[in-house]
Length: 231
Image 1 (spheres, helix red, strand yellow):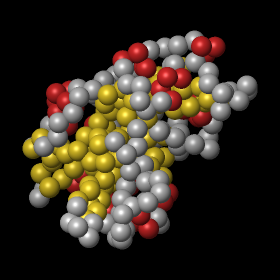
Image 2 (image 1 turned 90 degrees about the vertical axis):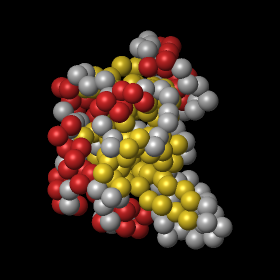
Image 3 (image 1 turned 45 degrees about the vertical axis):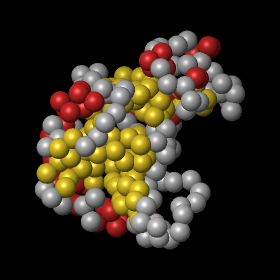
């Protein structure tokens, strides 16, 4: 399951997604965690726009101040079933999260959680499917938030995390428009595990386990013996 990911430069994201309007403003980050504000591409009156959304979905129907952990991810099998995701899914509130890579963790035989950095081999910036919602408090405070869509892992990530976890729903470029503009049926069909042969992953330092750490060194390859951290 993707718990952290890496943001590209804003200019690189705009070159990849070509938003009609760019309301967002962000810098590269190497350790994005849930409850942080992240850039996203969505539709507004039929045109694409780049906005900042809080990662961790707050459904519009929530009353009072949101409590507990927010849903940062939703599995494809739960899009229509979950109370939190059903309304934005059927309402076409879909968006795309720009990334340059993401982290997954392997439980080793010694019961250590070894982080790995995964990326695409031929695309420096790519998009992951997500849904978003708009929550308004009794005081008219507004929070727009999102949840990343995940699906069963491909062979590369299964070898790292096992088949029981999930991977981000990486979109092919030709499916960006389908995800944003298409019907729920067409959008759901675009959600397929990304081909393992077009990806690579390597072990990295356990420093990524702390959201307070954010520097380019996090994505550098590290020997497993130096990158283990007890559970």
